[in-house]
Length: 195
Image 1 (spheres, rainbow, N blue to C red):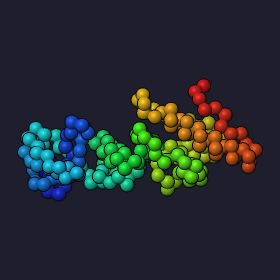
Image 2: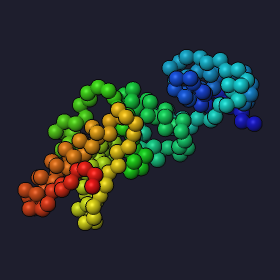
Image 3: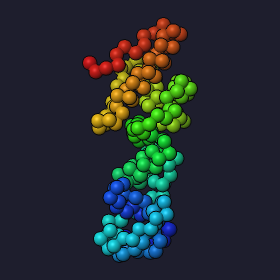
Image 4: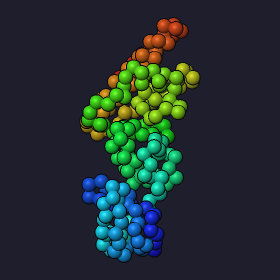
């Protein structure tokens, strides 16, 4: 039976957020009543049934600076949801899981698509924060490096921002390829829609 020590972190069930990280205040084992404290300082009294479903939380999951979730040693659904939630609250709507970009629609304008931001991704995405322009530049560079067609898949629910992401990718590719065409005489973006 799992036993949790004071000052360690656990995942607790939450009706709104699914899971929340909470700091253990007193030593307890699964199935024992206890009180824990969430990140915002709110105490949560857990009955035996609620403490039975507590899981250990790696403190890495609390760090919103981790922008690529493959760098978290214990990656699971709770970590992914929490990282996306805390990054969203900081207007960091893009998060990577290796070469996959997760985008959370902010439903407001953010200064993420200015010409200066576009230019900052022109030379590649290495060392840059996750961004839809990073996906675009990687596809473009792979097309040039391997002389093979590339595809970017935008997936999500209705209203998730797939059309906006596609427009931004095309904006980036058009800008980069038109400047490349001017300097190299090469062919730019040929088709931006499904065949």
